[in-house]
Amino acid sequence: MAGWLKAVDLFFAARPMLHLPIWSIYLVCLHYHHQLDGGRFDRWNLLMLLCLSFLAAGSYWWNQSFDAESDFENRKLGFLQRGFLNRAQLSSAFLISSLVGLAIAPIYSALVLAIFAQAFVLSFTYSAPPFRLKDRPFWGLFANAWGIGFLVPFCVMPELTIHNAGLLGWDNPIYFFFAVASIYIITTIPDAAGDRLAGKRTIAVLFGKRAALVLALILVLLSAVIAYWSGYVLLCGISLASALTIVTAIVFRSVRVTLAAAKTPILLLTILAGYFYPVYFVFIIVLVTLTRLYYARRFHMTYPRLA
Image 1 (cartoon, one colour):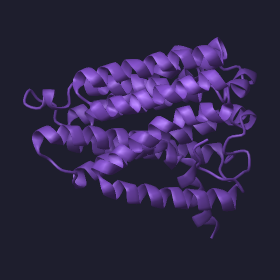
Image 2: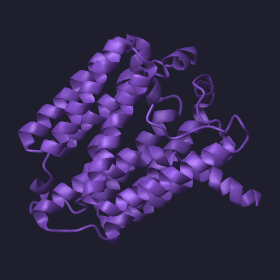
Image 3: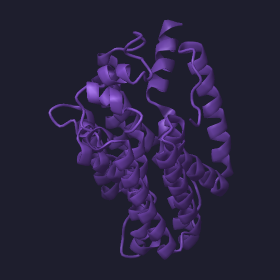
């Protein structure tokens, strides 16, 4: 029984709800890619999503093994603090899951291996000293925007050739680069107090809440412009809706509104991905239900929630 409970703890310590941006970006890009080449979601796309989740899970396990102090200050999770898992287990899980993803990559192409290798390097340097990209204002922003926003869209076309190079379009990864950068900046705001105590230098710590929100607003408006010029009307709508929530957060200065500003674009993108691939909706509903049950029983808290 203890072994099964440890496995369940490890699964949820991988922060599956935080994989939503990765899955949703991949599915939305896959839809637009297939609009042009006539393909459909198949077992290879499913395997790609699993590989991306292996890499993402490893990144979150690795991050928690270094972030115990600031997580405690920000009242986050507590897998380490409550003794559910230890650093050795998290570090081993990071290494194993990352190697699994990297081992599968060559089955697709050298391009996928290069993408996964970049993701692995970013995961390692994001948390581990002396790099600790997450504690640096520019590099923390770049690691998230590049790793999630720019690299994930390219995974929908494992074989990048002259024939298919234009099917996705550079505008799509650039759109998500700016969109993810905007979301990342907002997520640094609720953690600013704890991060400051832990000696971190995130954008919110360095510039303050209002300046961080203004920068996030500029980036999301840039993504809206790119989407509009490129003909991605629905993505433009998501960016404009996100911009409205950021403006609301600037005006009302509420923590709940700020959290909603970070989560609203992810929610809208997930709905769009579910519209394109209805089975994804079913998967998300099951995942949210299981996550809520787990956190209610294990942590006596309600998670996830919009704000």
